[in-house]
Each structure stands twice: as C-alpha cells, then as structure tokens.
Image (cartoon, rainbow, N blue to C red; front, side, top):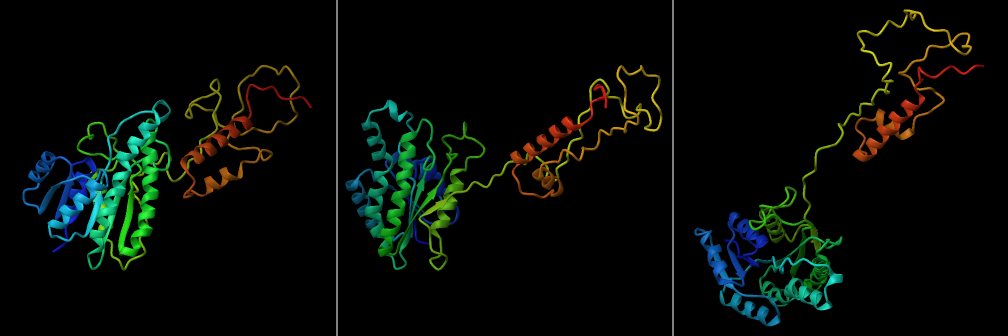
Length: 339
C-alpha cells in the first residue's frame, strides 16, 4: 500500500486539484487547511477515498511545529508533501503602496513555505528512503506581473528558496523541488473567467504527483521543474509557401477568358506622342528582371517548403518579394524612354 501524501492548502484552488489527482491514483491523502468547515466539505466529496483531514496552519514557526506534532500523532509515515500555499490575490502597484504592504505579502506568500519546510522535512527524513517535498510556484517569477508586482517578487524569492532547500535537504536524503507554473491556473473558483490556455488544477496536481513518484535511480532531480503548457496554436501559414503573383493594374485587368491571344496584333491604337524604340521587346508581367536580384532569404524560403523559420519571418519575406515584383513589373501607362 502506498504511503499517504500530505497536501498543504488542500482546500484552495490548486490544492483541490492535487487532492483529486492523488485520490484518482489510489494514494491516501492527508489534507491540511486552516478552516475545519472547508475540510469537512472536501472530505464529503470523496466518501470512498482514504482521505484524512487535519486543521492546521504553517503561517509561522509556531504553527508549523504544531502541525508537525499533529502529523506525527497520526502514526502514518508519509511519502511526500505538496505545498500549495498561497496568500490572497490582492491587486496593487508597489509604487502606490507603503513598504509595509510588501512585507505583509511576503509574510503571506513566502515565509509560510519556509516554516512548513523547517518542521516537515525532518518527518520525511525519518523514512528509510526519504521522501519528496514539492512546492508549487505561481506566475510572475521571471517577468513582472502587471498589477501584481508583489506576487512577482514573492514568486521569484520562492524559486531561490527552493534552490536553497534543495541543496540543504540533501543531507537528510530528502528531495525538494519547485513546480514552476508560469501562468494562472484554472480552478473551480475562477473557471467562469479563466482563459483556455490556462492549465487546470487537476493537471498541475498530476504533474506534482509525478514528482512525488520520481524514482531515486533516475537522473538527478532538478530544483526547478517548469510546467510547460503543450498547447501550440494553429500555424499562420501552411508548410509549403505559395508565392503570390505580381499585382496587375486595375485599369488594364481583364478576365482570362476574354484576354486576346499573345500572337494577335492589337487593334488600332493612337500614334505615340514620342518616338518609340525600333523593335520593342515584348514585356512579360510574370518574370522578374535579372538586374534586380531577389533576397537570398526569400529564395531559400521558396525552395525549402519545410523550413523551420517562424511565421512572422515568412510573412516578411512574402511581403518583400511581392513588393519587389510590383516595383519591377512594367507599367503599361508609362511612355517609352527615347534613346
């Protein structure tokens, strides 16, 4: 039988996804959250599962020590911990807020992870094979999140905290990893206004569970594991590029069915106002003069239909070639230049 999994913040949006992923895989779960009422509602949703609820907090060192004692009293050594702890989603600019605002947000978003790790990592180290401690990070850790700068600072600090804990926990034979989710997560609380490209809380829970079940004999674990959303959008251009034909003049555009044959001489035409060349060469609108070479990149793109250049580059090349053809095509209204 599998050892239970401890989920911190089990009644939150992401925490519920972790609980569901663990229960779906047949693993026992110890769900930890602050409010007993929400824990009871969570347990009622899985009547047949091995789900133990425990009211507790990791807001500070005292609360973390109390939770560790309560977990030890259960007498069930657990295989791993998933910390889905996050503060309130308060919005505001840092420049418009006092310094105390950032201090308070770090107390809510960052320090609880340190308090939990300090008191729960020793419990994981008591197992013969150690265990895995997974932190779930939020968006904004690499690029500023507009309107949520405090969240970006907290997420960036959490990445470094995970690296430090990863190195320090090696002495206890415990693996610490951060699952970096760089986009908001679709949960049951925000699904009405969530975006289609956001990952679901269940998928995040499944990825966290895969880190818990990571075999120690595999490749060395990384402290930061990115959650990559595999949802490529449709290609803007087909793989094989079709070059557009040069544009024709609107005044002289005629349907193909009514166009006169190339060998038929034209009807009566007015005398030219200026002397014409003795033997004018017939102009072809489908060729490009050799004196104006095409860009090498455009030729390579046209000859290699499977090239891996991005769509924006391909569009620029097509526009450049169409512009060259329009500039070099002979204009029927232009008078011939006398010799």
